[in-house]
Structure formats: C-alpha cells, structure tokens
Length: 527
Image 1 (tube, helix red, strand yellow):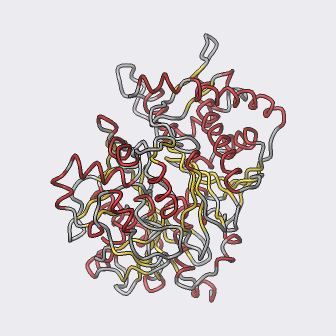
Image 2 (cartoon, one colour; image 1 turned 120 degrees about the vertical axis):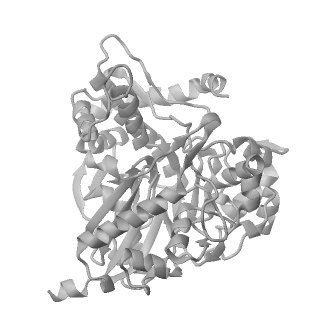
Image 3 (cartoon, rainbow, N blue to C red; image 1 turned 60 degrees about the horizontal axis):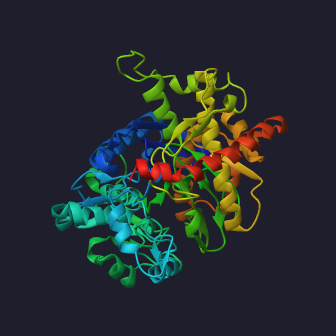
C-alpha cells in the first residue's frame, strides 16, 4: 500500500492525426485510465487539408474529465499535465489564444507554390537555390519542402491566400503549443516544437530566439510567433477556470509540449542512441535518438532537438501509414454508396487483420503503393499516388488486404536503407508501436520484409501518451532518463522467416522500380 500511496501521476494528452487520446499515467509507467475521441480531417480542393482546433480543445477537456473521473486517483497526486501532438500543423490564434480558422494540416500542400518560389535560385540543387539551401541547413537543419506540407508552407499559404486571417493572427502555433496555451492562458513554444517552421536555429541546444536571417528569407516577422521557453520547461500552472472544470488542483503544472514521434519513441522504450522504432498510427515514421546533428535533404531526413540534453531525434516522416488501411476499409470495402457495403463495423480492423492472414506472403504478386498524398521520406515527391499493381483474374480481396500491409512494410524497408546511411550503422532490430503493432501478422511481415528483429511493444496504442507522461516525469525530476527503458514491456519478439524473405526481396525490388518508373506519369496526372 505504501508503494501505491507514493505513486504520482501525469495527465497526458495526445493529439494525433486521427484522434485525441487522454490518459493518466503513473510514475511507474502504467496507463491507469484512458479515453479517446476521433478527429475529422476536412480534405479540400487543390490539396487542402484542415482540422478544427476548437474541436481539439473540446475533445481534450471531455476526455480529461472522463479519465480523471474513472481513474479514482486523488487529484493531489496528479503532478502535471503534458501534451504531445502531430506537427507541421498550423493554428493561427488571436491574443486570447482562440483559433481564427481551422488548422492547416500536415497533409495540406497548398503552400507548395509559395515554398517553391521561396527556395528557388541559382545555382539550383534539387529545386533549391544552393546558397539559400546552405543557410537553412546550417541553422534549422532542414529546408522548406517543395510540396509545402511543412509549417512554413502553411503560413505562406495563409499570408498569400487568407490575408485577412494573416493580419488578425497574433501567433502561429503548432498543436501541442496550442493545447498548452488553452490549459494555462500562456502562449509559448520551444525550439523543438517550432522546428517545422524552419525559423529557429536547431543546431545549437536550447535556443530561445528566432533566426533573423531565416525570418528575412521567408519574408516574415518575429512578432507572429510565440515566446520560446526551454525544451524541458514548464509553461505554467493550470488556468483557474480550466482547473475548476477538470476538477484538478490549480497549482498543477503544465510542462512544455513535445511532438508525437518523440513521445512515441520514449513511450516505446527507445531512449538509447540508435535504438530504432517503427510507429504506425494514422501516419508512419521510423526514428531513433542520436548523439549528433545531421541533415540529408536528398532523403528528407534530418536530426532535430530531442528533449534529452544535447541529443537529437532522427526525423524521417513518411506520411500516410494507418491512414492507408482506413482509406482501403472506408472507400473500397465498407463504402457507403450504392453497393450497400457500409457503414464500417466496429471490428473492421480486426477483420482486416484476419482477412490479410488468408493470403500468402507476397499477396499473389499484388503490390500496394501507399503514397495516397505523395511521398515524403525517403524521397519527397508531392505528385506520386497510391494504387494496387499487378492485379489478375485470380486476385482476391484477401490479396489486396495483405498487400496494404506489405506495401507499408516495403516503404519502411526503403526508409530503413536511407536511415542506416544517415546514422552510419546497421539497424538490425526495431521496436514496433502504434495501432499497427496490435497485429502479430504485421509485426511478422515487417520482420520478413526488413530481415530484422521486431520487438512488439506491449500496449502499443498507448505508447505515445505513455512517452509524454514519462518525459514530464523526467522534466520534473521524478524520474531519470536511464529509468525509462525498463518501464516499457515487450510483448513478443518476431524474427525473420527466411522462406518469406525469398518472396519479399524480389517484390521489394519491383516496388522501388514502380516508384522510379512512374514518377513522370504521376506528375502528368497530378500537376
């Protein structure tokens, strides 16, 4: 009983691409209660994608109240509130912190023309003016994307096509910083959360100012961006009205936010340098912590500041992951149209897994291309799109279903190849987290496709909220970084099946050829 009384808790809020999840996590790393709400993404013409930031906040409060009520944890034992979120998502707010329009999502490419105009110059390298490129890489560690899916592209879109919103904007925020501002009434950000804007020097630790030269290059002014606090700083305490609504002590601290990929790595136990994870949620990424900074623009990889002192996190966002599964289920299997197959049942993802297991390795030669909104890492191309290749009269729906899993695993293998060059060593094992890691079959497919050991994280869907809470505990001095790996359990380890590898190796080679040889076709179809 003494151990239970000594436990402290963090209320962690995870704002992902597909939904918001709130959990109460103990100082032993246990998720004692959690609740979630879906988020709607509004897909618009000409590459637009938006989400309702006010709906984020309403869902955060709703799920927080549910978790606090159902956990039966004394509120005085809740030390802090911590937020993580998707990023490269821009929320323009007024002085009160209220959103002025829907948030511009990372799927949104409407800023592409403005980014491409911004980065152009002579001599040119991959569409970038060389001298501009050097300035961005030396300071920010990355450069504006050609596709415009980064935060800078979103701001330039708003400035040029929503000038009335731009004029009214007090600050442009990433989602995790928007949530902390609503919790505390104080608008802040950090060096690490502002990285997608490419306006802060990320090559030096704990920078608390914006780069004048980068602001000038972008044609923007510092007053449009939030005050910077230390990466592991405390934003403040809960606003009294928020504390009253949630039923928390108004002295409860709110720590600085973090991006979801960093939180997922920590919550998967991948804290040591070079210890890699594959995370498949709505989006997908392969990442690890690093002791050095580096940028590889050719493969859209860089190292961005980690919450751990003088360490970095490899950033190689691949784009759609689990969203491909949802797209397949909602639009092909359970579409609500004249065929009458919809709506999608609650157990659709379990059925997806079961039907996938009915097909052989290699899906009868069917290859799924997962680039539904273009490719990011390891090769940025906003024009490429998804599809099924090599269908025949013998193709069955089980082949298509398994091919979705395999196509996403092929993209992870492709990204792994670039990542190994980036870090200068082999990646022979991965932790596997996110909703995708609930599937034993998908874990085995990854082991076979990558030829690597896959450690399936226990309770993988809560990896991100767990990581957010653990980081808060470290920031507040209740845990040490070296404690964290031992607080995350591994459910099962999958090793490669050599007979399946012989099937996947030639299919992977064709997967790569399909990307290379069809780029001109995709560019013509998706100008």
